[in-house]
Image (cartoon, rainbow, N blue to C red; front, top):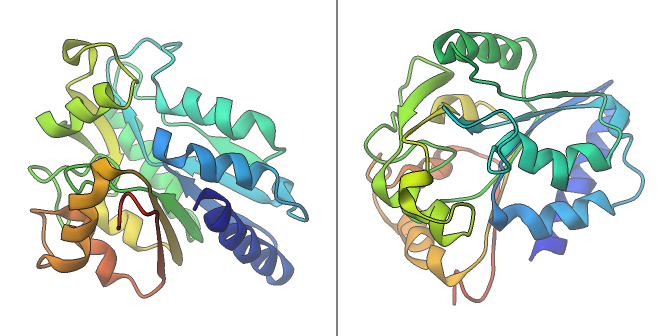
Amino acid sequence: MGRAAAAAIAEDLRARLARQSRVRMVFAAAPSQAEMLEALVAEPGIDWQRIRAFHMDEYIGLDAQAPQRFGLWLQRHLFDRLPFGAVRIIDPGNDPSSAALAYAAELAAEPIDVVCLGIGVNGHLAFNDPPVADLADAQDVKIVELDGACRRQQVDDGCFAQLDQVPSHALTLTLPRLLRSDRMYCVVPGAAKREAVRRSLRDPIGTACPATALRLHPRVVLFLDPDSAP
């Protein structure tokens, strides 16, 4: 699944770079994306120097060098391994509200071509958990309080040793901001995601399962494995 997703993304990038001067991408940081990213790093024939990279969410309150920070995770798995033209990391700093506005402005400067993302066990996209997700959100980047199921997932994924270590708040790209991208590649492995996948495909579109919003986008490719979609 990871190799298939990486091959599709790489084919898309080659085609875009053949017809436009640069590409702007947003990446999710999560263990579910690791195999796809590993395969993407190995894909040939991509001029990464013409690609500008962003990511979609970051914890508030973690130390700048904490290994759980999503920006650092992506640096280890992707950004430090390829010669990107530019990489813009979310840094909430001491003023997350100002950081959200600044990051939103950078995202809005030009169209976002490609988003690579997953689906959370509670159906979240980025950190748009059911209690805070908004299909008509006026903000592009906002501060959110993390849902209990979302925080538990971070422990179950091995990112934190115990629940009280998981930050309670984060910055996230909102649903409308994600959906304004030209194409989306959604990679969802594992049995823990099975119910979220079913709901994403079958439930009414709405914030009870934020990933149902993917069905509003005309160019989404969903990659599943035998565990997440038996």
